[in-house]
Image (cartoon, rainbow, N blue to C red):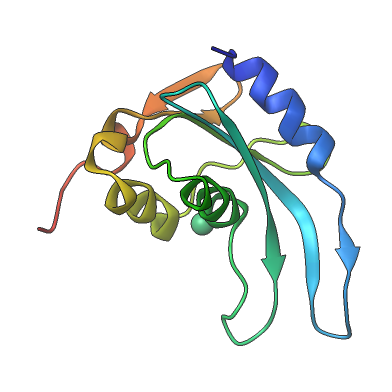
Length: 126
Ligand SMILES: [Zn+2]
């Protein structure tokens, strides 16, 4: 199993901001996640107006489910120079809904601080 620091390093290398079109940018944030099988999946954000883009976490999760996996054990998202971004509220909920066991997923939320999803998604609505 890879350590969080290694995942962060890989994510940092994936950050590569590019302008795709007049409106659309990609790659300002990159995410790396590791599953219970020890497999790694990556994704980058797509920033587009009108709420049609999505987060790097969302892209990494899509890649994971394309490979018939749902159980996340570690996840990290970074921007330029390895700046850590905790998952937004939508992604927290998304991580949970993909597999309820992901409530135990470890997330790097700031420098030297790893929390479980349960700590940042404490009150379930369902
Ligand atoms: Zn998000």
